[in-house]
Image 1 (cartoon, helix red, strand yellow):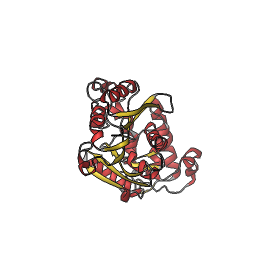
Image 2: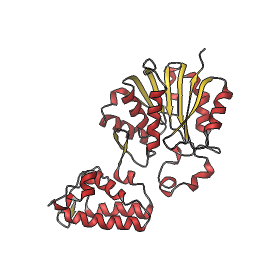
Image 3: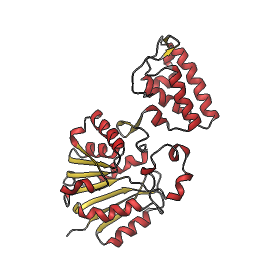
Image 4: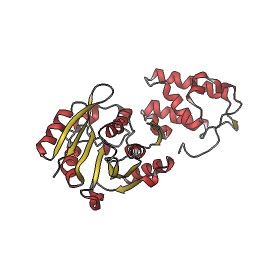
Length: 308
C-alpha cells in the first residue's frame, strides 16, 4: 500500500465523517501513550494522509465535517498505525514524508530520515562562505533523500549542485524531491561511490558537504529499534570506529576541490577531536574547525584545502 496513491477513505461503503475520525484519533493517541510512542505522531500521520493542518487537528475542528477526504481506507490507516506501535516503523516512512527546513521531503526505507540537526549544515555552509564561494560547482556526497542538495541549491542560487549516491532507490527519491520543489534544473544527480562520478570536475569543486555513515559498527545494535531495524544500514555503518567514510572523504577530496575549497561533514558526538586530528595529519587542509549544534554538541567539522 502506497499512502501517496489516492483512494477513498471509507467506513464500510460510505465516506468517513469527522466525528468518526475524531474517535479513531482518540483511540490511536491512547494506544500511543500505552506503548511509549509520542501521541503527536498520530497527527503527523493524519497531516500526511488527510490534508488536515496542525491547528485543525489540535483544535479538533474537523469533528464537524460530514466527510474527510483521506487517501487510504480506514483499515489501511489503522494498519499503518499498528505497524508504528507494533513494529516500531518510523512515522516518517509510514507517512511517506518528513519536514526538513522549508521542504516537505518524500522519504522511504531506501533513505535515511533527514534529521533537524542536519539542517544546521546548510547554515554552516552559508556562514563559512563568501558570495564568491557560492558559485561554481558544489557536491552533496551520499545525498540520500536529497535534503542537503536541495538546501544548498536554495541557499546558493548561483551554484551548480551535484548529488551522488550509491543507491539507485535513494537517487530516485532525491530526484522526486528536487522536481517537487522546483530545483531539478539546479541539481545534477549521479549514481556512484562518493567522488567517483565527478572525474570531469577534478580540481573544480568550490565545496563538498556530506552527512556520511558515522556510527561505529559495534554501536548499531544499541540504536533505537526505529533506526536499527528500519533505516538503511548502508547510511549508518561507519566501520569499526565510525570514521571509514570520513577518512575516505578527507583522503580523496583534495583531487576534486579547488585550492581553498570547503570540506564540511556531519559526524557523531565525540568524533570531532579525532576528525580534526586526522585532517591535520594529512597535511592537505587548513582552517580546520569543529562546530556545535543547537544543543551545544560538536557535530560538524569544516576545513579548507590548502592553497597550492
